Amino acid sequence: MIYLFITVGVMVLDRFVKTAVDKGMQPGDTIPVLEDFFHLTYVRNTGAAFSLLQGHPMLLVIVPGIVILIALVYMIANSKTMKRTFLFALALICGGGLGNLTDRIAYGYVIDMFDFRFFPVFNIADIAVVVGCGLLIIYLIVYENRNPKK
Image 1 (cartoon, helix red, strand yellow):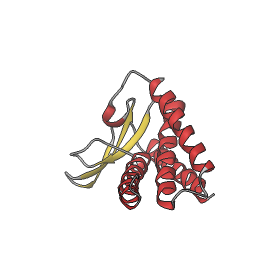
Image 2 (cartoon, one colour; image 1 turned 180 degrees about the horizontal axis):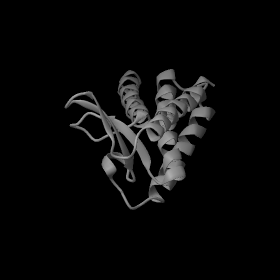
Image 3 (cartoon, helix red, strand yellow; image 1 turned 60 degrees about the vertical axis):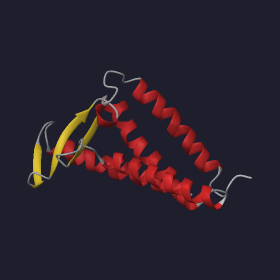
């Protein structure tokens, strides 16, 4: 069940980076890596993507929790019949989702740190979710084009 290892690996990497930022920086601190382009900035995000839904913490825990649980059960139940790209995409999405969900449950906020100055600050979990969703979209386009409905 390699896909569960990928899910857990994403969570562990995400937690490691967030813990390092939390221990080494204070909220609001920023470290220029490439001046005026990329910084490490410690942000505590109480909302969802781009700080949406701030002030709705239960919604940000319950809905993702249910979606992740359904995706994990589906991934486990169908691991022998689904394409590897689809399972890999789900593993990334679940790992990233669990990484951010863990923060929300433990702290009430998500720790973000990657700051490109022209884009909202994000983290490893966010990267995993976006890459997973991108792979899922590519999979659906390619798979649907190869297997048109009759």
